Image 1 (cartoon, rainbow, N blue to C red):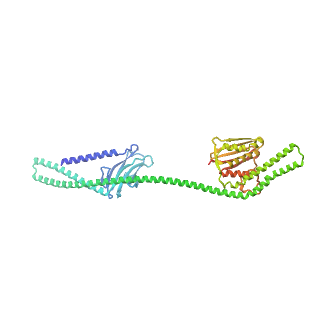
Image 2: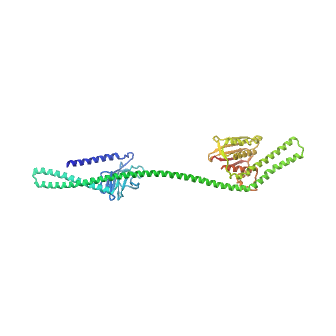
Image 3: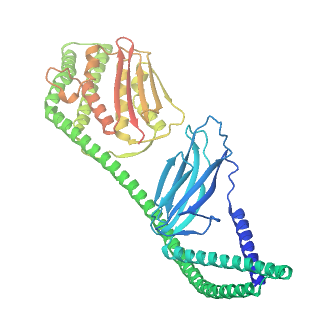
Length: 511
């Protein structure tokens, strides 16, 4: 019997030592924190637990945690509180913030829980790492543990009684030798020993039953662990599926945003086309009146000059030099009429600018400027006008309708030549505008300039011309120029000072 008692004590000591080593090896170090929360004790109902792992209780039990803040000086001016977070296996959590150093939970549902206890300074100066304790609410397991605890207590009591009575038996024998105690005491001792043997037999049977129940409990726990592992795998699969769906939704939302942006751009273009159609309808309604006025004002004068010069040739006997001069004037008037006819032909197609697609292509800016200047070179040479052009470094190609922009440049340069004095200067510049993301063409002369009335003409809508509006071939050409530039979604501006010159500027967007 003593040998068995020693073996039981040895096993208990071994289990306690192993538990201490396991807890020490699995404890988390938070040395990097200023203070640590320490668990002083854990009580289930009124029973204080010796170990803080594999804690199991029923839903009728209460569990209380007592804790302290280690390393904190009591005379410190800092004020701190505790934060307690209780989580179940579903991820639900309940949070408490308190100044007390204990917390109590009761009537918890059957589930697996973990409690995280941390402390923090109310002014946000420091916070501790959480102390984590795990426990489970399981009625069946808690009942088994309670029965096992009761049997262990009964066995411990019986072992204590056996040891006590053995000591008394030895003491009685010694005293009988010394004092001659009656044999009756020995009989009583024998009866007590028999009763203890009966108690030990019952305790052994209970221990056997308890061992069987513990074996069943361990089997159930193994099954629960397998189920939990399976649930964890399913949870991982669901999380992966959730992440995949979130990624797909992000892509769908991005595509929807792109479609909405394109739709807004299309609606804007539709509104712009409607506005342009309205302008072109008004221009078409006034075209006949404009052409009649231009023919009357632009062609009548050179035609009358030709008629007068021809009559002069018939009426007088002129020398060779006079005849050459008259013929020269006739040729100039004829060229003016031809130029007016060409401008009218071009302008008659203005109403089609917004109705057809532009024949756009990638055009070399250097080649475009050289061709446009070459087309007016003869007129510039006659007036000994110096024409220079500058192209900013890095500008190479632009996507435009070559014929229409060539007409714009040719017309603006020809206008500059007509309005510049002999030996004057014309500068054609081309540079990039980062703000508006486009290329700017600038034609600047030092000629006669424009007065306020002529400048005002360029700031009004040409579709609103009336019979009182001063019209000319130049005005009609500028109307064509403006519509060609607007067809490219560009901008057209004029700046002039009377007697100092004029600057025509237009911008063509890169995209």
